[in-house]
Length: 425
Ligand SMILES: [Zn+2]
Image (cartoon, rainbow, N blue to C red; front, side):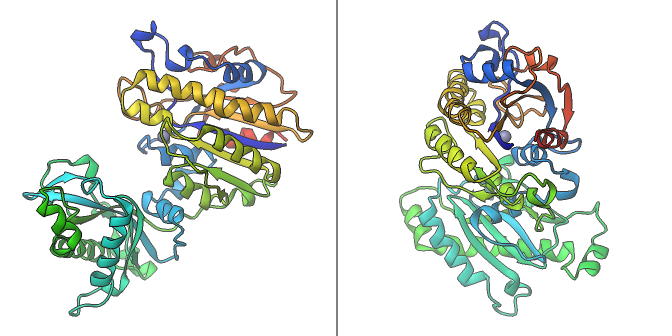
């Protein structure tokens, strides 16, 4: 049996008054999901472990069967994998935004909509100036900036300590930046961490990062890119801002854990999800026109998934569009993203694999709720369906938050979903 997980990011919702008290999954026209639920088995899944934020990286890692308490290392290492930077064991990888500061405050977390081509020039400049020993500046030989996408980049500190407290810049618009500088995490006995692993202490890591932030604020405004922006009265990309750092995740690959998975593929437009897939041992397949929005290339992703299933035993297709529509609070658009997922992605995959002699098991679920009326992630249990040819159906007739309460899987927790899926052989 081959397996495919089709994940509609943030697709689950809460009852909406405008829809007569229905959720979006209850209201949307989604004949294929409903058919698979009717012919298959359903349940609900807790995707966010206690003590973790309901982030996509957390929920998707749990869905793939990993214990977050053992493997969670923040965004930096996931983005490193997505960019193609293979982390060494002593690396600390940190997400590094290029942001806009004005009058001592964080104005935007995105550097005034910095484009990747311009960002690459700024990152090269920062490497030139900061990633080499200058004026006996302690620690600079440990530093490497790596270009990512738009304003989202990576900073690697060789021997850096992850027990630091950083402020995600998107959480602090219009706040003074100085009190938000990096600090050592005082809840951790970091001296013992440093000596046992040969890493810098947390305080030394925080000091080094703060030095880099301050130096970037001297250097970036002098760069011709920002000089031109200033001349036009536009926002400058005038400071780095590191956050969410971690070490290389100690994740066993899916192949190491499940004998029925010999090779697998992840298909997603989102770097964090690709990063999880990389550490899980999955190939990352690019799909042209995959945008992470409602205008994404659904047909292209469906075809890529079908192609992957021809050679691989396991495919993880992640579609971001519903989450974005939820964050935008756009009810009509979010309904459309659910219907697109049904008719333009799940339908072609189902219709193709249904004819194969080798059976394929299809699972459909979201990672968390992104309710259109709350516009933020909510970590409640999500509905899931599992279908394959010959499966013994339960009584659930439709795929949605309410119907799946009566599913024969009941309420599963975290890694149990992947364990149940892999029992289907
Ligand atoms: Zn998500």
